[in-house]
Length: 228
Image (cartoon, rainbow, N blue to C red; front, top):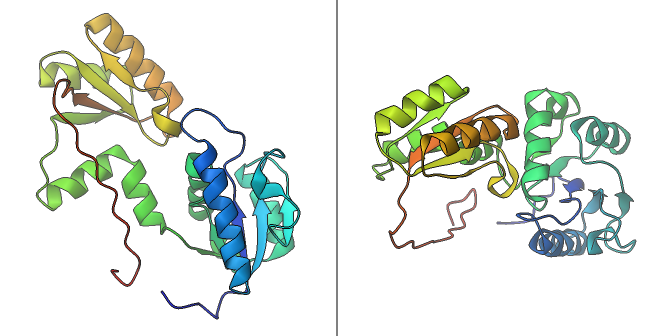
């Protein structure tokens, strides 16, 4: 992609403290993003709640805010700095959740800040279990028998429809699958389903038939707006 001359100042969201499911790779990628953007002549503003991160070294960004990674705090930084764009994809689940909140609440539109790295529909499709399932079905990719639940009663109905254990519980918009698990019986299922609903910021879980015993092949594909 060619350099965009319409952007002058870019706000990057870090990942915060290292936790399971969101660790050193985000610190590394965020550090490289700061370096690369500054080399291209952009002014870089960083928000990260982790003072021990390499990203927060003084020479990496033009200005660094060691503040909580919350929508309210990031809005304050946006109001003060007036960035042209927000880059959340270097900060893992925490940064993505903040970016989605800022976009949906109208903060980005209010301050005329463009979301770059990933557009809102793409983030929502990847994070919302139902949207992702429907997208796969639309392009003809087989998916496991599953259903979306927002409460225990709905989860139980989906489990009965699938008809056999084990069942997998996958909460939406959580870090590294937090709140998810495999249930081998009804007691485990009810406990995990409620825990997953409570763990999800949008109170949503996917109840899915388990494919335990199958072989898994994983591919990672990168594509830009020009379809490269």
